Length: 359
Image 1 (spheres, helix red, strand yellow):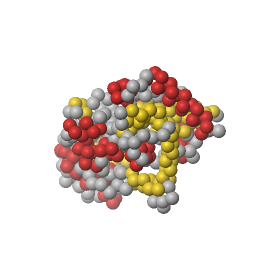
Image 2 (tube, helix red, strand yellow; image 1 turned 60 degrees about the vertical axis):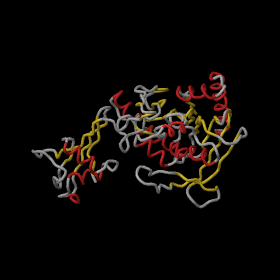
Image 3 (cartoon, helix red, strand yellow; image 1 turned 135 degrees about the horizontal axis):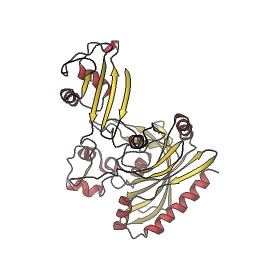
Image 4 (cartoon, helix red, strand yellow; image 1 turned 90 degrees about the horizontal axis):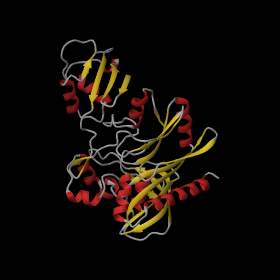
């Protein structure tokens, strides 16, 4: 398969593809499905009928059954519509359109990523993305170095050029980067101040429909999956909730969320690991019940990448992002916390813990 170009803009995505010999005489809708796997065939057909998929240089109206030929160039345009919208209790959630840039120099950006913003375009999430936002801002290519789940907010590191990006990517792969997350969970029992979880995780994505990713945890001596290690620092417990800091020592998918669920404090708002697949699917299809919202309590899982410590230009750099407003407001409503004092407690613990990790 040959992709000639991809152009990401805040309002539309344009991709051009070259038809190879193996796809000669293939239907246009079938050809596009090779590239656009997150769209159904019916959705692709509608885009062709609306004139958003063209065989360049070929006159006349194209239809889904129009045959492509070896050497053709096919251009697909996807306009921003409603497919990235999120709803809470029947109302559309207002996204943060101008996220804060925490740090910038000639080589990197450090962004305070808001919830629902993807790290980079993937699947149907092509517009509300960190790389698209920054590229639109400065008209230059931006490279993702690591990623955060869409609903996870917080510190996100991105590169401005391949050299800096590759160097930082290696630092992540070699576990030179230290990470800290702020979380809020639901509990059925009291926990001590610290909890270390050492387990193996495996992708068991046997669900149907959109439930393609579900992580299962296995004992640390298991031969299943890969080792996943998280250290939790419990800071406050009240009214059936727990909040604190998580220091993942490995970078497995959904690691903190899964470890929290397995050990008795699934994250508030986690549709997948607190709610389960049927509830997760109802949120995706906008078919939720009042009981679904009552169980979740907030519109996204309560996880925030609060700090990152990484090697950069000959020294260790720590970048933090304060507890965001949505989680802060929830804490004020549910717990008897002085948020200024609590934020300082988090900052002090993060600083001390990073010092122990990098000795």
